[in-house]
Every structure is written in C-alpha cells, then in structure tokens.
Length: 72
Image 1 (tube, rainbow, N blue to C red):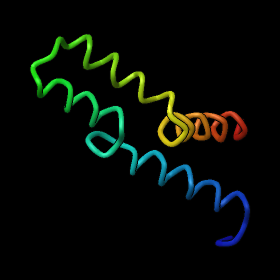
Image 2 (image 1 turned 45 degrees about the vertical axis):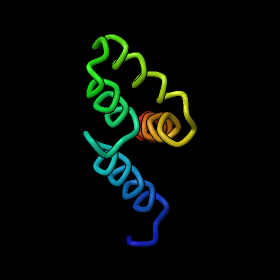
Image 3 (image 1 turned 90 degrees about the vertical axis):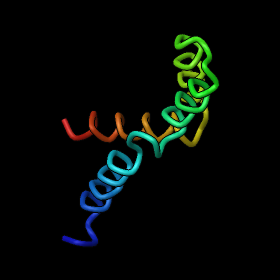
Image 4 (image 1 turned 30 degrees about the vertical axis):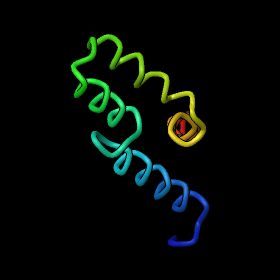
C-alpha cells in the first residue's frame, strides 16, 4: 500500500492542501503584506489573485483540482 501510485498521489494531495493554508501561501502573504501598508482592500485582494498566475502557487491548485476530478 505504501508504494502504490494511488497512495503516493493521495499523500501529495494531502500535503498540498494542508501546507498551502493561511499565512503560508503566496496569495495570503501578499494580501497581508499589501494590506499592512494600509492600501485599499480591493487592491490587496487583486494582488493576491495575481499571485495565482504563478507556476508554483497556481499550478499547485490546478494539480489538486485535477487529482480530485480524476478520483471521480
């Protein structure tokens, strides 16, 4: 069980979902950073959404969604 492809993919998904939460991910950090400069809240959120276009943060979300859809 520990070396099966399904188990490995499940562990990858678990790690992506649980380590990419709140202050630890790029978009949350960006929201806090821009907001701490007392910028307009909408600009803080738009900056965070822009971070989703990057291959490290946005791609992790895409891979998690692809994995869930494949499980159906």
